[in-house]
Image (cartoon, rainbow, N blue to C red; front, side):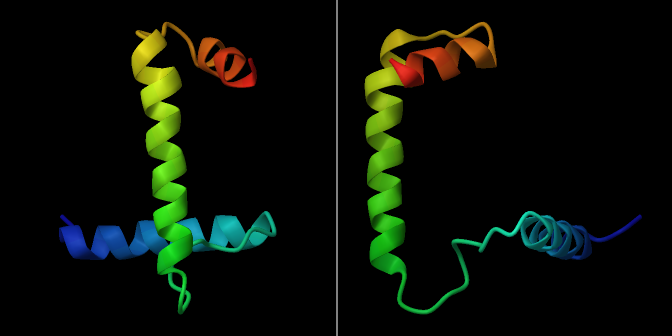
Length: 70
């Protein structure tokens, strides 16, 4: 049985590899991006408050996608 830390490290490495394969830069691990992260957290919070929590519960992912596009 693997230790939890080893499993987490494997998942993190695999996640980074998948991002690289897709040509995507990770949003964590860079210097000086705390304000960008705060902005992203604010946007996510507003999205959840105005769409997800107000109009749920959701039955399908497609329903969430359509509500997001409205």
